[in-house]
Image 1: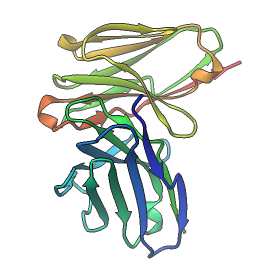
Image 2 (image 1 turned 90 degrees about the vertical axis):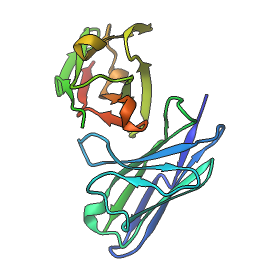
Image 3 (image 1 turned 45 degrees about the vertical axis):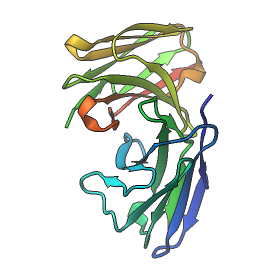
Length: 114
Length: 110
């Protein structure tokens, strides 16, 4: 079946540094990728939607200059958390879909900012 | 935006018991999915069920689109069923975006 991977699976960084998270569709082409954030014991909140070759669409309240999203190819999207702070510590999950197909979710990346 | 409410928020069962999880949504949807999030955070798709009834082993789901709710049934629960169950919906006008409910935390004790 369709598989989505994320790298890294977990990362610890110092406050003020930038962190890049990759989301790859391994056996299908993803016309659309979605990035979610999940705080402990909470639900998934959509951060942004990215379509291959175009700018991401951010949800209300999500700072686009802080969470940079690039969807340069049909199999790769990246989320860069710039100047990370402890409040950015969270579980980041991506999902990918081909056209109107069902979204496939990645395993998530746990970010801890010290 | 659309509101998705799940109940109960927490559920504790003894192994072998049956349970029903509910998802209410505030507007018409063209997609509804049930997910199980395991202790490592991986979301596992259980059902894609915008309407009707589906069964997969000990799990089954029913969505009554006209009344805007969906039910997930777990029979003969096992300890491996523990985790968080999410309902997520997609509206035709939402640009393929899923809106998740707050989830039901299920604990199955041996």
